[in-house]
Image (cartoon, rainbow, N blue to C red; front, side):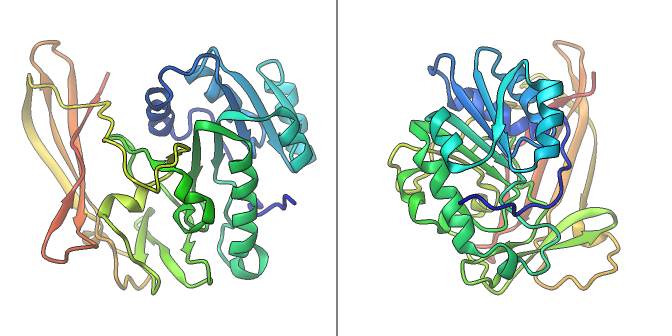
Length: 301
């Protein structure tokens, strides 16, 4: 049975671009993929999918009749839009890619254990797993629970890239309802504090949202590099700041103190201005180290 966990229908076109860019590489070799937007809201995600996968056959479902009507009117010519229930999903499946973006969550997280317990999350993930083709991709962003805690997770490997950074904006819980990550506001920025249930195998695990159904036992695939810094980049100046330097109206116990470093400059071969961006934070698995994400290149033009 499918229940509505997320009570907000907020969406916008080209949301989660790094995730889509990574998916296009991870799905190399799959021709004319069948893609399901699970919880499509008013249809912006349909247009995003068609932009990144122009040869795809798109299916989109939602449990809310009103947003389905809007999606059908604005994006129905790009996708098969239908009411979200198990029977309809089975009718149109299996799929090569299933996207559940800010759907399997309750935000704000008040009464999440009562209104959206882990058992319901697990049931919905299992339904999607049943309709995902072998070697297909499952993308789950902004979820109240972790995919790794489900029984089906062992059928998947983890897909990561240099441009996909932790992007959740909801609180995350362990299966028993104990907080895993607690969302805080720091000068209008989202920050996370470690909850009592927080534990990771490696520092990159905090941002995992893409999984390939290949029987991988949650092994990690080789990192996909999509935006390396050009060797011809010349740095002019550096701007960096950590979350702990900003003022917060909330108590920040066990803050994951993310620092963002921007090296501003120019690619002297192309003449294009841009910046090299790098995220880092004190390692959550080795307190004596700092974890650095790969540096990525961004154009100003």
